[in-house]
Image 1 (cartoon, helix red, strand yellow):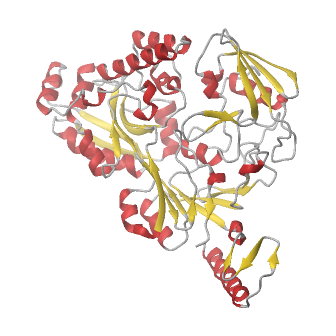
Image 2: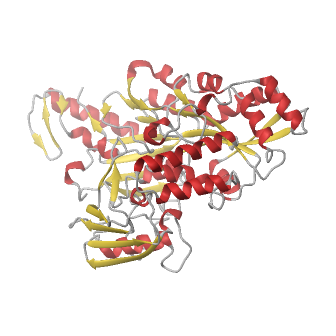
Length: 514
């Protein structure tokens, strides 16, 4: 970091000498005019502070949202999303859906190349989707693709996908990356077709990406030549690094960090389409009793958590759905469990635990936002005799222990937003592989099944809204808020946008001349 800073000072000194000479000499990487460079700064390395470590560079194996948002710059899918959540073409030039909703035909753009120089064709799409769906004879890597019955390629630039049954969520699934056929080193040297190339990964330190000069979307070739994602789990350290000029961008900066940085930065913020929750494991006693879960909900003051942890910048929730997806959102559930300590105590008595009970709350220590939330919950649940013990673990361990193996009692975490309501609410279907809450309700399962088969949007939304009501009535977990996300940027950076899913679209990033 110090070496980079010294080199930066030397570069600035040279530029000042050139400017002072009054020369208007055109350089290969920009034109110097007066004391400013129009495009010389495009070769600058942009450093972004990340609170978590990379879990896997292979986009089909990675489960961490932060990793996926970083590596999204390396990979492109058939489709992408704009900042409104609308699906837009990416590798696919166009698509058609058959009248019966079972057949999807994608026409690919010609001239798309992977970072290793190979052409992207239908063969690569088939390889990618067979790997995701399990049609290659191995375990499916994504439940979103298990619905595929067959994949065909009538030509090098046409792919026809037939589903086993109608599934309205499949279209949004096509934002998943397309990978080069038979390339087996994605976990160590990932290759995609996105706007940035993988350059280097130093475990526990940084992930480096370099601009892809041959990006097929010529209008969106990045301005920035190199980006380094620096692992900095301590938010205070990240703020200090930004103040000293060692960090240029902090995604998800805390309110306290914003106060420290003051007017010296640019920011972009907005709702995340995220659900922060206190997940309750229904396979653990006494959390398997709905009255106990309802009591916990009644004892937790969400407004206080939003004010103290999110500095008031969050939307209170009552179910596992954010109003950012307004068309499918069931309003009014956020106040079903208005704080009521006496009622909570009464429910615990009915459930046979009048004096409360000990509860282990596992929290990913990499996320200070969740740790702070957990500390408030400790105080609130103590009012009804529930003695909460916070168990901090690294997020990589959380993924294995909690998310994959459901070895926990309660946890505070966030479910990231998706582009389709099915991908949000399927998490609670009884036989869903990642239903780590262990929620079981046959009526809920049936509602999700009806929603996924519906062709009428209003009918589909009705099923999803009813499913949200069931989650609230059953107190499946404690749904806290959709916290606003604020990205802090160096004062001469601009262009980053907020998306309904967590994305760092670095081709949007621009350096202004100040």
